[in-house]
Every structure is written in structure tokens, then in C-alpha cells.
Length: 102
Image (cartoon, rainbow, N blue to C red; front, top):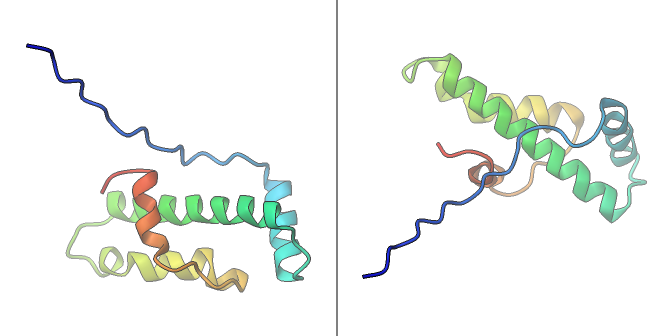
């Protein structure tokens, strides 16, 4: 009888692929609406990583019955997307499943 091979999904890294200087440059370009599609894709990926990392830290740091834990999605949404003046993508928190399981 052949053995079953258990395949696990490989998670993407939460580590940033671009430098801080390049990141700030892309944010500046997006805020002035002079960003290319490829640059926008890179920026959205980095913003999503930062959002997922923020949620992950809230899950680790606070107890489940605390107000900070309950408001983690809103707090992270404001700090990553809204304060920079960007509209968040639809269901951005569902994309965090690509980076870690929760």
C-alpha cells in the first residue's frame, strides 16, 4: 500500500523585500497618483505584509478579552492604510492567511 504524501502550503515571508527608502518613495508616488502598475503591485504587497504583521503582534501581545485584541483589525487598518491616505483593498484581512495561519 503506497504512503500518502502530506503536502503543506508554504507560507510567504512577512519580511520586507524592498528598502525603507524605496518604500517611502512608492508611498509618495501613490499619494501623488504618479505610480505605475508594477510599482503599485509592489507597494500593495508591502502594505499587506505590514498589515498582517500588525495583526500578528496584537494576537501575540494582548489577551483575547482585552479591548486592544478585539479592535486589532480597525487599529491596524488605521495605522497602515488610512493614515497614509489609501483606501484598503476589499477583504485585506483574508489575505493574511497566505502569510501565517491564525
